[in-house]
Image (cartoon, rainbow, N blue to C red):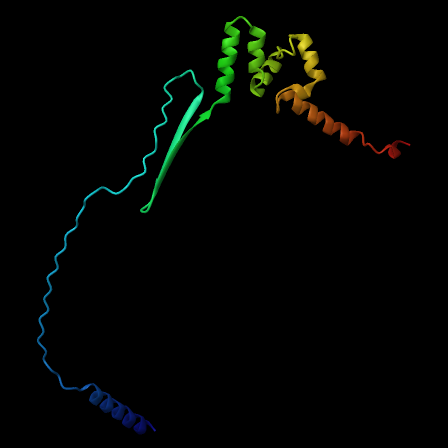
Length: 176
């Protein structure tokens, strides 16, 4: 059986060698190409420019911002100003205080919860409709919902209400 394998191998080898034998032709080719190009630039690519928002007057409470976007096809740009309400409140309070209306100036600042909390912690509560000192403190404790949103007295009131609801259920049958 090994002789048959050897004969088959020789036969396949001879067949393969005849398959790849082909007449060889010498071909002499010359390729030449001349390429010339020129690029014409007649203008710069388009750009979107952001408008400059200039706020020169330091007495106004505005902040300028602008942005631009440029693609290969189109560009967009724009700008705006934003009011700084806290800056306005400080300027108003300073002006009113400068006119001698000190309680009114403090009342303006007390519209900010940070100022309200700081004065409350310092033991000098914000004025309450003209009342100052201990009289104002009593009015604030009677009306905590009139204080700025998120102030200490409102948080304490909400926490007290939550504790009261859990300690004293409204179901009266439990107590009978």
